[in-house]
Image (cartoon, rainbow, N blue to C red; front, side):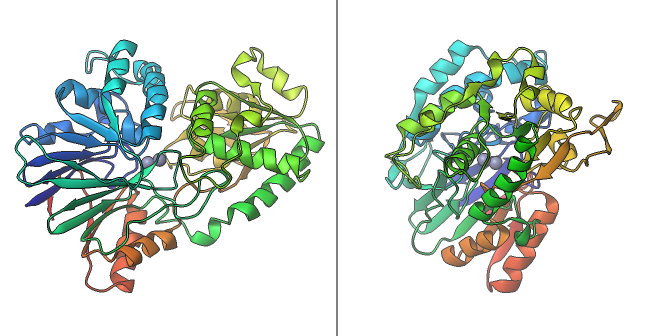
Length: 451
Ligand SMILES: [Zn+2]
Ligand SMILES: [Zn+2]
């Protein structure tokens, strides 16, 4: 018997964590933290599996909402085996260390013991890694049969994987975060061949009308036209971006536009952890699917944003600043800089990715020049003097592509995860309408599904 139990990332985006009991072997898919929640609320609900077998945790990619709760899981279950791709392991080493400072701000030490850098080092050393398309076998302490696991390139960020789980008479595929279409650097996803019995599928863009998600090259044209206008008038542009994935994709996009003289030349600022992540992208460029294996992020002339101690410097000469976090979470560089940016008439904030509705990023993205923005319930209203433009450079599949994944894998059951409620509704209804004989489940935290 196979039991599927969501511990997080169901009916929402954040703290992705799904437990599978496959005839006695306990497998956890992803172990993320909820970026918008605080304290214990930010962690997956590990209590639900306290009495279950727990043998393996498989990590789909190194974004915070899929990885960052791993140290807390390992603390509870020290003998759990962690497996991911070599690229995600290398990125995890950077992002987990980086998370410690975020945890210190977000988590209450009385509720949860926060980790040391030494503990993270030990954890990283214990991570096993397997390349894409190389199947390997696992079996838990009380497991009754061998289970074959294969990672497929998910086309989302470097190292991202869809996870195929095969046993005697069942094939289960978990998409992780998946993008069928190529981005500037990373090529689109690979899918397993043949029929799948159960598909666990993300639904980030389920509620987004796909005409709002343009082709990367078309969006790059619109971006360069708008950005050139600001730069030519002496303004500067702030781009909030996740340090893993979006920053690298935007760096290449912007640099290629400048090289082709479609975009006005200006200094590019980035830095912090994203510089180290760039190196991991560069090291791996010949072993993963890249659109151009010879291209190196290191070849782009960049200035370090964290070496600028006086932010007024950003407005003395036109420049482009790429800063994390992507959804402009309070206290992060993009949030702090945005508060400076909104006071500058000639400058602009360009958002380039998905914004969760509850985040400051969503508020900034939807603010208008000349309008007001209130960032917290009791905070004061701020006047928005800069321009704000929304762009979409998607790292997730559009909703039609999500349906395409379902059509290609022909599952008997589809379990929808990693999306807000309208996204899940659209996905569920569309699957039922367009495809016959599929049982659709909207995953719910704490609610078991027997596969
Ligand atoms: Zn992701
Ligand atoms: Zn995610």
